[in-house]
Length: 303
Image 1 (cartoon, one colour):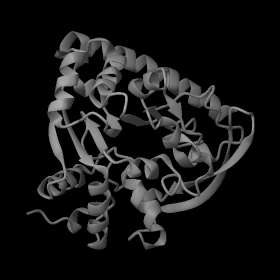
Image 2: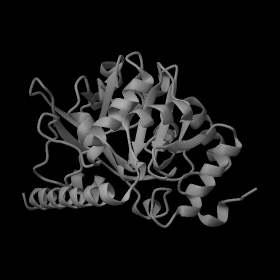
Image 3: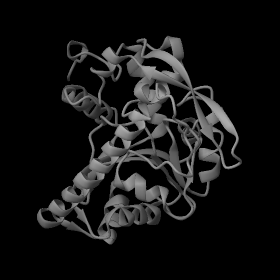
């Protein structure tokens, strides 16, 4: 109960901070229209029928007139009704995966639990036609013609990112693209698909303990879902850690030189996308050479 209360207080403070930040951005940042976002996304390379897995920083796009709803509408206009949009919609009341797994009174219910991923995912979850996967820590939200397929059955998948997960099903889509709006190559969940796919053949032992967390579906059926916590030491040297700007730059350069990454401005934000099949294939190639999102600085060789 105490941990849940702390989580609620933390969430409330985060919302207040975001409101203050939004007001500051409105006063100081470049104003961006929805139409400009559509044009920028098309110029970047998004096409009708694309399935995009989005990771984003709303503030990096500038002051978007219409807020996160305008960003979502622009994405929908870019991929059209025969495309799909996916976003991480994680809910971690403990603050971390491991702390959430250790909560005594936590049961994920998508009907009442939102997301801790920011204003854009929060708005996306409330949008018309959006579906959400049933998962206690790594829920995914999707909009589009394949939204049901992309989100169904996540709670029955043997691992978070593996077979039957939204990430694996996203990979199956014919025009699947991993899209970063206003972000580096650090906070990208797609990396973890490789870890689940390779399992013990992944170069490093990234997981620690497996837990079973309860979820409740629309029929009030309770499911026990497997969740693995990450190795704390490795997490501190991972590509999304604040200290690993070197690794983020290395991956950006690596995927650009390989010809897979296309970059450009969307609004005021430096943005990029990589076709999902190329992304995974090149991650596998790098892993075979001992390079992963956990590689130490001395392992990186720049051309």
